Each structure stands twice: as C-alpha cells, then as structure tokens.
Image 1 (cartoon, rainbow, N blue to C red):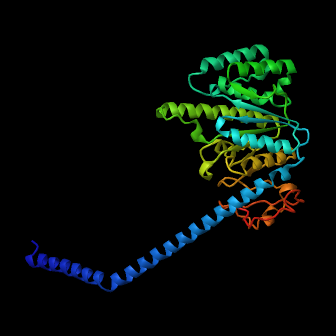
Image 2: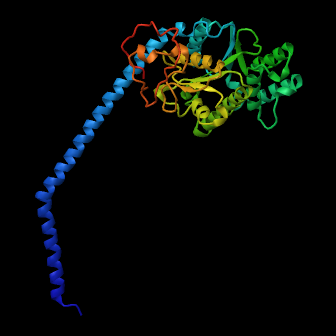
Image 3: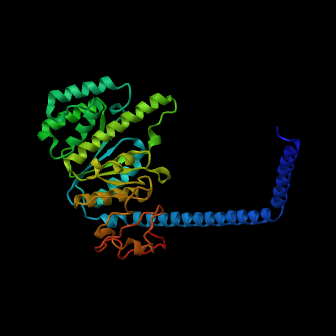
Length: 362
C-alpha cells in the first residue's frame, strides 16, 4: 500500500514546479521570449511593407509600359501582314470594344479583309439541344466530310466553324461553304459581321472574362452544366484550329491579372494546344496589340504565351518590331508577376525612335 507521505511529496513537487514556471515565465524567460517575438513581428511587418512597395512600383511600371506600347502600336505592326485575311472569333459581346481595336490594328498591319465570327449562346446553352441537332443534320446533308465521329452536337458545330475558316475546310467549294455558313447563322449558332468568310490566313480568338457567362438566377447545378458546355464548345473549336496549322492566337480578358479560371487555363495547361499562341490582359490598353503581335509571330512560325499573368512566358513576343522596347521604357525585364520580358534581337520599326515615358518594362 502506498504511504500517505508519498502522495504528499508528489503534491508538493507539482506545486513547486508550477511556482517555478510562473516565476520564470514572469521574469527572465518572459523578457527574452517577448523580445524575440517582437523582433520577428517587426521583421515580418518590414518585409510586408517592402513587398507592397515593390508590387505597387511594378504595377505602375507595367501600366506605363502598356500605355507606351499601345501608343506606338500602329507603328509597331505597320505592313506586317500585307494582303492577309484574318478572322476574329468572339464568344461574348463584352469583348466588342477590344476586338474593334484588334481590327483597327490589323488594318494598320495591311490585312486585306477581316471577318468577325460571333459564337452565339445557342452553341452551348443548356436547353438548345434540339436546335443544335437540327443544325448538325442539315450540315450532314450538305457536307458530311465536315463532321467527325465521337463528338456531341455542340462539339461538332464548333469544330465545323474552325474547319470552315481554314484552307482545308473539308475540301469544300465556295458554294458548299456558303451553304454551311447559312445553316450556322440561320440556326443562330454564329453571327457574321461582314461577308461569308472563305479560308483565312490567321485567326484571333477573343475570349471574354468568365464572369460574363454567369447567370445569378441559376442554381449551382445549372451553372456547372453551362460552364461545362461552354468549355466543351471552346475546346472543340481550338482543337480544330490547332490541328489545321493555320496561325491562331487565343487572347482572353483576365480581370485581376488572373488566368486561372478562363479559356487560357485550358489552352496553356494542355500540350495539345502548343501550336497556338496565347495572350492575356485583352481588356487592358495593350491587350489588343499583344494579340496582333502574337499573330504576326505565328505567321512567321513562332509561338508563345504572352502577357502578365503567372502562367505567361514573356511580356511581349520576340520580334524585330518589339526589339528595344525595354530600353525605350527604362525597364529591367520584370513583368510584375515574376516573368521575364523578351526584347527581341532585331531592329525595332517603332521603338527605336520612340520617346520614353519613364515607365519600366514589366
């Protein structure tokens, strides 16, 4: 049997340890620990202030470069695409002002004709299945070679749009092409601004910001169905373009400098689309120019992912026309997201004599 004195000694030991801990915690240990924590907090605060200052500085420099580049845009692209035929494909009216600026720059580049193809919601909206099925059947009767096995109606129609714009186009004659376009427009799958397009020499796909497709009245399941259908439609179109070899650029609006939720996430994250070039910041001052510069590079056999989001490769395509822009703006090659900027190795047609606004190339 354990003696009572054993319990007494144990209790006394516990209380002594507690007292010693209280004394040390309130005395020298508390002072050392407090000093250490205060020093760490101050160090973290200083680091945060430094990073915030750097971020603000980089954002300012990036805005300055964007303004500078957009100002000299017409000179940069002048006569770089003489006689070319270019199609601009859009998926939402919110990109209208941006695609108008792309069209103006293409005109400066010497493009002979620009056709605008607006993808309509009927192409992917839930509830429009019957209309899509009728469109597919009519196209099957006109040009069955355009349709592919294993695709649903939305994918079939999207792929047809891409094929009709390319030189192959299922080896269709002009009359059959026109008839297929009439099916697509008649069933409100697409809307055309301009003449019925023949094969083109280049394509710019202008993607709207993801929030432009949201419907606040929908529940989560309906919104998810809509988003998946839109993704399927876009993917089929881009797959058709990438397989044909026609120079093509995917340019998307990226509010908040975020490309993690839109069409760029699909293209930049899938090796199947490596043949396509991509640009972000379509909604910004220099966004349309980035798209046109990337198309110029595509026509010369180049490819890349350009802009300022985290998954871009460079700020600008590496072209003779863009050579020296960093020096002209006093930049250091950073882009505000940790991505380096390419300056090119040729003679700049627009930058060499351009006045600097003091901004950095970010």
